[in-house]
Amino acid sequence: MCSVMSSVKPVQRALAITLRLRTNTEASSYSAAHNRRVCPGVGAGEAPLRPLSRSYCSRMALQKGLLFRQLFETESSTYTYLLADTETKDAIIIDPVLETIDRDLKLIHQLGLNLKVAVNTHCHADHITSTGLMKKRLVGLKSAISKFSGASADIHLSEGDKITFGKHYLTAIETPGHTDGCMTLVSGDQSMAFTGDALLIRGCGRTDFQQGCPKRLYNSVHQKIFTLPDQCLVYPAHDYQGQTASTVGEERQFNPRLTKNLEEFVNIMNNLNLKKPAKIDISVPANLVCGIHEV
Image 1 (tube, one colour):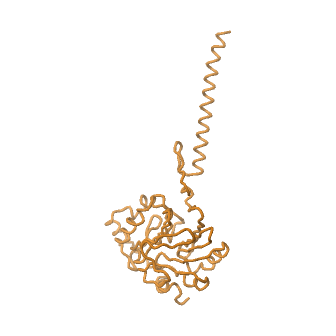
Image 2 (image 1 turned 135 degrees about the vertical axis):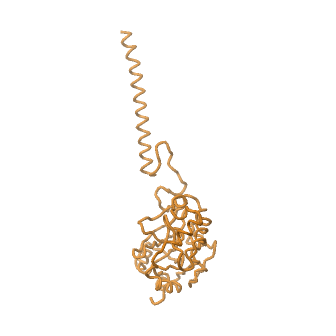
Image 3 (image 1 turned 60 degrees about the vertical axis):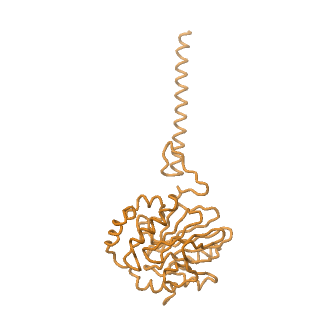
């Protein structure tokens, strides 16, 4: 009897150990699966990132008290961005397009926003801005653009100028190269950069017209944008592949043009042989007068 019992106890102990190991493994597997669902790209054994105020896994701007909308115009593949303070309702709009002015004003009205500034990242060649007409329809709205753009506006921006809306603000950073007047607008906490045509997702703006210069563009991106935090979200003025956002870290690592050295980049840009934008002869003159030319 004693020999039987003594042989059973080791089996029981082995079974108990097996059950404990299985439980731990299942818990670990569940945790890993949960992490993958919540933060794609987080592998087993890696703790998911826990940022203080926003989740970069979501690829969305989640600043406290900030309303953010990314809007799209299909003909020129232009992104328009609407940002607002959720408490004061003060708002700004970036790169609005004439064809979508009714959509944008309807959204602003529905959300009860007080649009303070309509800013263009540069003088666009592929579409007409709606800032001039928008000013006619919204009392008190001011237009803004770089002082080097050659365009008329209520506010001419210089390096380091701030565009405020409620408790939030964007800082204007000069990033010429696509045009002389290109600016990148960076949020106060450097979590977002609205890069215009200077930096696109896995690309950049062309440099073969409107004072374009590949060397200036390369230096602008590397010295002004690629020096922002890796996790800073990049929101361009255009995308032609269905992409909505990137990060500074991604573009620094994967951008097929801007990962080259300066000489290679200049050679690439000088040999793109692109057709000129279909609306350039209409858009540029109109945008130089805030988009109200013959509107």
